Amino acid sequence: MSGLLAVVGTGIKAVGHLTADARAWIASADEVHYVAADPLTEATIRGLAPHAQSLSRFYAIGRARHDTYEAMTQSLLTGVRAGRTVCAAFYGHPGVFVYPSHDAIRRARAEGLRAIMEPGVSAEDCLFADLGFDPAVVGCAQYEVTDFLVYRRRPDPSAAMILWQIGVVGDLTWNPGRTNADNLRVLVAELAPVYGEDHVVVVYEAPQLPTCRARIDHVRLADLPATPLTTASTLFVPPRERRAADPAMIARLGLDGRRFGLAGAP
Ligand SMILES: C[S@@+](CC[C@H](N)C(=O)[O-])C[C@H]1O[C@@H](n2cnc3c(N)ncnc32)[C@H](O)[C@@H]1O
Image (tube, rainbow, N blue to C red):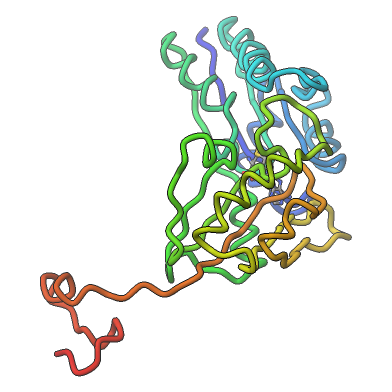
């Protein structure tokens, strides 16, 4: 009998985001492993699969997150290699900023084992809803914040930008609740020349529990290092300027320039 790995997401909101697909995999798998961000989701998972095991046991203060992810991946693959159906449930979308989910699927497939991923509701989905922002209008880049800094990614001030994991900027270990303010100052030093220190950004936290509201804090870029952040904080950087449409490109595409703010164009 060949094993199967089913990676599912439980969404962000503890009530209402768990899809029928995710629920079915959790309820039917031989093994269930999970990372939950709130106790209600954890209780739901354990209600569907009383044998479910939390992967969060691999986190330890100061331990490199990469080592924790490797332990999680190994834990998932052991059952699949033994011919069991293993469900891995991660909060949010299981393929959005979740290293071990992709890694376990890659490695299972490389060994000839079946592995699938079902999408879930991510923090980004909640952000678009709560901030009333549609990425279709000006575009939206997104980066993991440490990756953004280390690779000196170039922000486009005419588009929006989402920076994930802002609460652990420059920290590759697990240290919940300990944001490094010096590293935030490095981030501000990178962004200020592009946006200006007075540019207002949004610290966003989607609500997890039914009784909670979203955190939507508007903060001047210069004030970011003094702003309390958590492991659930995501930074939304609105655009600073409008980009002018290129008349030559509009003509090449045979489009009506008036649609793009070009006066008198055909
Ligand atoms: C390891 S990633 C997990 C993302 C998750 N898989 C998803 O689909 O949203 C953790 C990062 O996601 C973002 N995040 C997680 N929970 C959030 C929430 N409730 N509100 C806003 N952002 C959140 C933060 O940027 C956080 O540092």
